[in-house]
Amino acid sequence: MRASRLNARTVLLILAEAAVVFGALMGAVYLRFGSEGAGYELIERHGFLKAGLAGAFCLTAFYLFDLYDFVVMHDRRELVLRLVQALGLAWMALALMFYVFPQLMIGRGVALLALPLALALMVSWRVSIHWLLGHPDFGERILIVGSGNLAVEIAREVLERPDAGYRIVGFVGTDAKLLGKRLINPRVIALTSELAEVVKRENIDRIVVAMGERRGQLPTQELLQLSLAGTVSIEEGASFSERVTGRVSLNMLRPSWLIFSGRGRQARISGITRSVVHRLVALIGAILSLPIVLLTAVLIKLDSRGPVFYRQERVGKNGHPFTLLKFRSMRVDAEEAGPVWASKDDDRVTRLGRIIRKIRVDEIPQFWNILRGEMNFVGPRPERPHFVAQLADEIPYYEQRHLIPPGLTGWAQIKYSYGASIEDARQKLQYDLYYVKNQSLILDAIVLFETIKIILFGRGAH
Image (cartoon, rainbow, N blue to C red; front, side, top):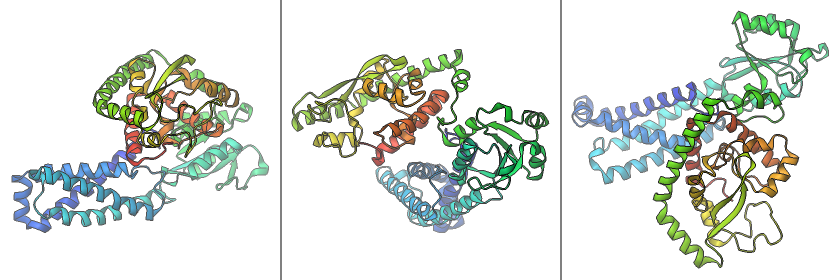
């Protein structure tokens, strides 16, 4: 599944569920008023538009409860629970809207009938579609060329995402001793010299090449013939992994990726456009949040001694340092012994600091950094020079995250839980590099929406 998560499959699912919810509302109208009364409600009283508005509330609730994230929705019990929660939230929001704007109500009593009907239809639909997506006879049939660590890693990523729409048929390799061996779940089913025959026999849709740097063993002639014949899609392993996981695997990353993903003129123009948009968003955010800023400043002064704002040096674009601005959430003596990783339940955090960190209010002053051009709204989170030096020594390609401006939020922040170790930094770097390569206004919008969702549910803050 593409990282944008707005691929054709997701769009079709959204449209189908809009039709399901709309159908439930129409069914409730006919049950409540009969055919004649329903016609009056739907046409004379603009019932179709009202039902569309109610459907939009439901789809928004489904998004907030991650019901369009195929990766996490394997458990049917969890699926039903989230559907109940999402529809409950949508109906409470609709009840509030109908109370404030009664003219938007689709007839008296319709909502009470539509809720159980929508729940029954949605549960039936979702259970059916997830069974279909997970069925071994559906989805692209994948053949992995290679039998080493890279091939196994790619297979594991696909197997961990059974709803991603891919079915691994097996591996082909160069070592006859591995024939029939189960590397992870699929087996080595043939040698690379038999590639064309295997593709035809197994009805392969896509070949994923995962043979590392051992170029001499790559079945170049066989792959070239299949590519020219146009009977099967052929994809390099690192690109396939990136598309499925939404991150750049450091185990597969080669210098060529950095060379061929360089930013051209079009990318620079896109970067300027995004910077302007981000500053406009920051300006609007700064104006709207002014009452919160004033209230938070007063509460910080009342809660603990010390300044309202906390200034800290961070590493920005191209490694240039800048001063990050935040609301102070720790004691003034928090780092007398030197810089340390923040941690869960950190005892250096003040009483008010725990609250403003949880709801991300401490980040609001960074709107000023965005307006100054030191940051964007979306990008790799800026780190302190002390930790950057340490991480650059430990993690290859770490400095590449500084090719673009840092961000108040980022792709790594929404895809990976809060981290406070070198291994966590390594995992997050893979998502940061993905963003560096694929940055766009669409991806920025997705990150912002996901960030809002995380703030609403209070996940990931420390």
